[in-house]
Amino acid sequence: MIPIARPAMGVEERDLVWSAMESGQLAQGERVRSFESQFADFVGTRHAMATNSGTSALHLAFLGLGIGPGDEVVTVAFTFFASASAIVHAGARPVFVDIDEATYTIDPDQVEAAITPKTRAILPVSLYGQMADMQALEDIVRRHDLTLVEDAAQSHGATTNGRTSGAWGSAGVFSFYATKNMTTGEGGAVTTDDDDLAERVRLLRDHGMTVRYRHELVGYNARMTDIHASIGLAQLAKLPAANARRQEIAARYDSELRGVVTPRIRPGATHVYHQYVVLVRDRDEFLRRMTERGVGASIHYPTPIHRQPAFAAMGYGDVHLPVSERLTSHILSLPVHPQLTDDEVSQVIGATNEVATELGHFDEGSA
Image (cartoon, rainbow, N blue to C red; front, top):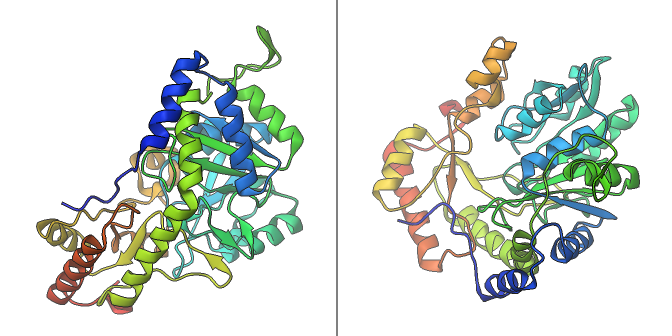
């Protein structure tokens, strides 16, 4: 079976982890500081604050920006659950809007229409490896005096208009989960040019301590370990080549796939293909037949957040997002990770084209 993801760990990760273990400094030490410095340089921001997960990073970013009870954050439901749950953890309320049908990212026109006196922030999700229309969103937050936070959990190294994902707005938030374009095993980071926000996030992730046993506020234990940072240092060095391989595989898919709708890239943007997502007819049957052919396709994500039981219980049952709801029934992720061999890529293409022929080609009428 060709897996949907295959994390790549080599001797570089092993050697750095072993040296961290031998050093005796395992938590929030020099390896973490080195990883933060190098990741900030990669993104192009003054600061990067490493955390124990992407969800923690997003939660702390909101708290560091003073977003909490009584505030609204405009975001999408076409994403992983944590994008919205972090808003709730901060005490604010998500306001869901629909996506752009071509790129699967937040629709700026709907964002503007959703703004109320309670709106404090906009949270676009750079989904599958492509950034949202960040320039349009920056214009909106400037007009309405709001805060822009980018959920960059899936877009390590993506760009739009020459600026890197995580370098827009007040903050960018990354995940380093095992299947991401680069991993620390588990972890996250907040990137920003805001010195005050950086200091607040550093306090919040370490129990509010400025010096040992002096607590300026009630914070959390959201620290990254030096073991995880060691993995991240090795992975960060490999990220440009890994992204280039993803783009090479995606180019073959773009050229050779038939009967499915392939990803569309916004002008001025680069896509790093955390997932390569196509639209298909009869998605569940399509997935079953791909599995029969030895291709581990997957669904990202089967249910939009506003239709999840947890959010239905919070009063979101009447929210209707027609584009998100329609496309959720047709999306299918194909393997695109850098460890795929050329023969495996050919197998994925052959299986996809066969199944599309059997079930019928996807077109706008199919949805």
